[in-house]
Image (tube, rainbow, N blue to C red):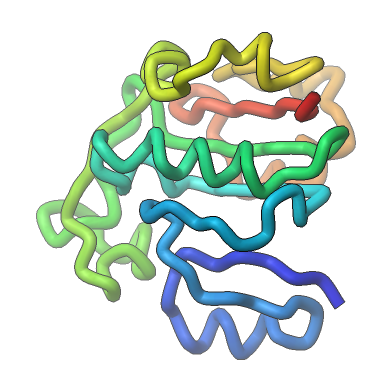
Length: 164
């Protein structure tokens, strides 16, 4: 059984996922001291644009602390050009989980936002890493092939890194 943190509190989603994962509800915008080096894979999909600017460094530090050496950190978020979503001011249906928990914050992020949020440089944390906001659909990786229906290559930022 896979243990995973889940930031969202949508009970229906959690009930569906429980057949393959053990979820631990935790607010990743707060410092987490449990599970140091406890995960081979950290994934965050389309969350950072809904997290207040001052909370992004804490989330990133949690990812770094919780990921094992040699593990993969992968995240996506809305970037330049993406329309606001997931708030009561916008299309709330495009991100019902954030609306259900009362999050009203939204901003697009770019690579510089993440580089400025870490105390250390990415070169100190990751042996290999990459930011990109385009996808080569003529030569996609297996990961991108599996996510094709979820991603928009023009308005999303992607990051993957192997932790040292």
